[in-house]
Image 1 (cartoon, rainbow, N blue to C red):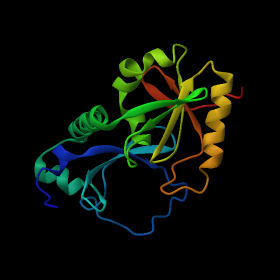
Image 2 (image 1 turned 30 degrees about the horizontal axis):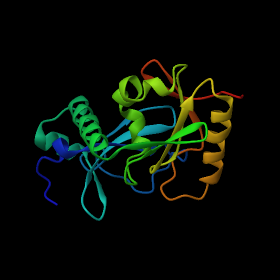
Image 3 (image 1 turned 135 degrees about the vertical axis):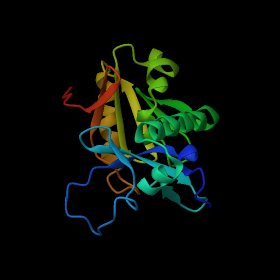
Image 4 (image 1 turned 30 degrees about the vertical axis):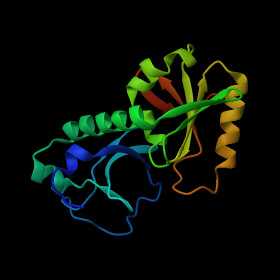
Length: 185
């Protein structure tokens, strides 16, 4: 994989905020991955598919390509949208919907506003609640669906030992933002 134009090929990718604030290793700013806050427990990072792995966009790539963090975010969300337009399938299971897209970017779809405001808005007239307990798992329902909320909690419970975990929370979409949900139905 060449490092040219990494920023233009980046895809928005959610990562958990680590509760342990002691870093395992210390990196210079240039070698540090670019992160932006998404929720109080999730960060948006930016990755490029390198075939056998995902390579993180680092601050040195921004400097080299003269790209701002905001520009990177815009390009990465646009690239995620293009990927979703090509691969995304949403299936209904009981009272919830599950997003399927190949295994790396399902949870990252939370960053894709068009998905929630246009593509699937009709599925949740009372707003969205979603579970994204791992990078490859995104389920959602209408916020008014008591059965949907029960099923989302079951998805979270079944995913406790998954690869690439995020957090075992439900998220509520309020306006254009996702927030950890305190829904207790």
